[in-house]
Length: 286
Image 1: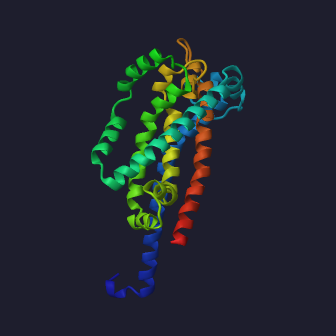
Image 2: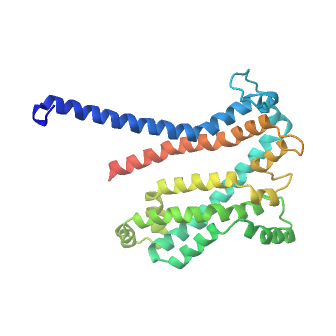
Image 3: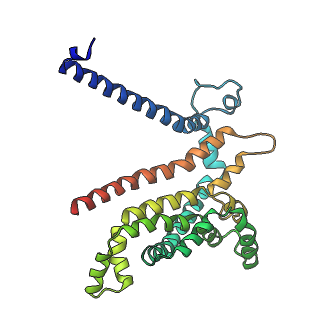
């Protein structure tokens, strides 16, 4: 068929088919990516609901009778609720202290262009954690702080505070300085302008940085393995209870992994809605 024979209706139909094929390809790509990302979580849940016999079978068992025995063993026999509480306290304390120290540092870097401080914080974040481990252990042992929340909170700051600083630098740089100058004219000090003007405008960034810092602290393993003890052992370290020299309790590991992941997922989903609401309200007000 020649180009001249193409009517406007046929051209429009071809354009619609092209858009439909393009949308179908994008949808298929999204499905493939989501399947690859979510399959490990799906398999983790299946593992937590299967018996040990099914989990160690050479042929993957897809059809089975679900059991909650693994969850019962994790919660009742391994003091998992105590480990969860320890993780929550450590993550909350390290996130809170990281915000108290990191927000002023990020503001100072953003307003006064302190590139040296920014690079030093970045280097501290990129340095392997094993580099800090021995000095921290020797110092805390000399001070009698092994197996305390204080020791774990301070060490987790190495993980969370640089993350908070680097996320918040861009947010503070996006706040117009005219707003601060208006606050100065009204008699506010720099600290007052920071607390009353800058922080409220940067709330979405603060929440996002807090979530990430909390999650990184929640999942931290190396510092917790060496510096924790019976009184402060968090859940990543407690998972070791399901690994022995002769056998691995795959069902217990799966159940523990689900219980570790679930609070973080729920927290993220709840606060994500709050972030979107805050951004929408700010756009409407602007």
